[in-house]
Length: 254
Image (tube, rainbow, N blue to C red; front, side, top):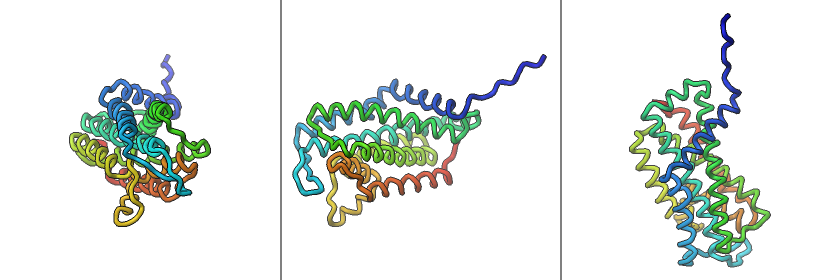
């Protein structure tokens, strides 16, 4: 008697299983924990202690520096997990043939990408809890009415930077991905409007079109003003679409 053929699990279960597998790998990776959580928390504490950041509300009222720096550090952490973490991991998986192998399993290319997205969401949730708790202990007071918008901007930012990280991982060598993602993370975090707000006037206003600046501005608007900043949200959505289209065109599995 011929034994019954085994059927693959439903697509949703395969995607979640792969996403949780990647989440566990990330949480067991000391280097990724350092970049994704520990360094952002140190930046938060250091910037607060040095009191080098201040800001104003939409009505022109002064706000404490911790209310400005905490959303920026959240943006920095999202970039670390979605861009740097996923970019490096996918780059070496591609170099070692893991991506090509997994894309031929029942998980498939789409399931593989969605599984990585699940892992990013899980890590971002942990980052928000840890960094948000640290910010609250230091005096951060986000506008309760803006928490929904804060969540939306976090999702848009994670989508954009995950797509950019995978685009880089699928088009250059793993060693180049490792170097470029780390360098860009530092540059964008320090001078790309992520942690420190950019001047909205003059030539520097063009930097507001960077995804890092859009993420930082969007999170600050939601946290401080309790509102959705439409331009940063559109910028993040635009970067997401462009990165996904470019990845579909140039991404190489081997």
